[in-house]
Length: 253
Image (tube, rainbow, N blue to C red; front, side):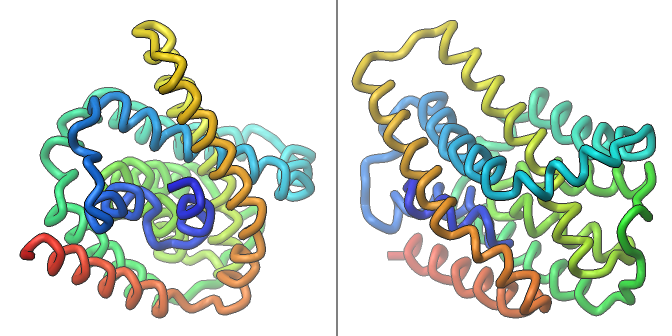
């Protein structure tokens, strides 16, 4: 799962859908595990990917911090708060209502359609053009991405392109607003695990998953350049639909 997390996190194909469906497709006894522990493991994988992005994109992050001002602070805050509030308040409801194969497949398909439509919008806005309305749109997109299959990367790219940002700037905004949300989720799950306690065996597998996710993200970091170079989101939309159909067919067997 750690090996899958890196590439799936860097592409707009929903890493959460891949993590949720991989055990089903491989007939693992994943559902027998404690739900809170399963979710904590998935968040740990995201944490490993986030740490790799902090390292591989450090020059980009440093450049953004150099010009950090009140406007950028507002964009970042508004891109974070909806997802944080929605996730904290409705996380368990979302998992129970939308976490199954049909819900995940629907998220993949609907998210893919939204990406394809956003790709057709005029995109002339560039660096330094983001304002509070854009931050809010990105925040709502990240909140929607809590639904399995929607994809945080895909949702924020869609929101940025619908707001008229150029494709390279949409990719930059997507990466910039992702890290606070991912790190916040890791901190929340880490605090919950610390309160309830986990066994040494469970801690070992969390560490292995995090380390493997970190390594796979580091190894796959050039995929970011591929998304920026190829620009069009249609291939990823097509992949999402194909993956959704695979999930549904597997469910029927």
